[in-house]
Amino acid sequence: MASEAGLYEAVWRPDEHGYTHAHQIIPVLERGIAEMEADPERFKAFDSPNGWGLYIHLLPWLQRYLTACREYPDALIEVCR
Image (cartoon, rainbow, N blue to C red; front, side, top):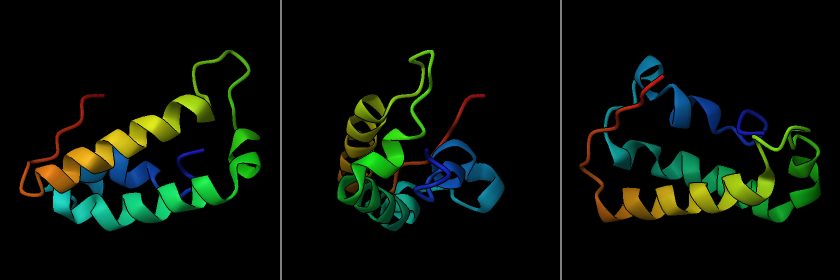
């Protein structure tokens, strides 16, 4: 689902794609969220059968992430895998 929206690299692998600060991923988040909001059924098709990856959970989480990035644009991005 995140890949379909063009968000996977920025959200889960930012370090591998040159994203180091929150302001760098704001445009990516904005585009991906807009796509998800415009065509929910397209993205719900990627819902995980086991419930671990659902549109209804991912979209609000991404929206909160975008809000945080806007509030703290100079924040360093770190991910734990």
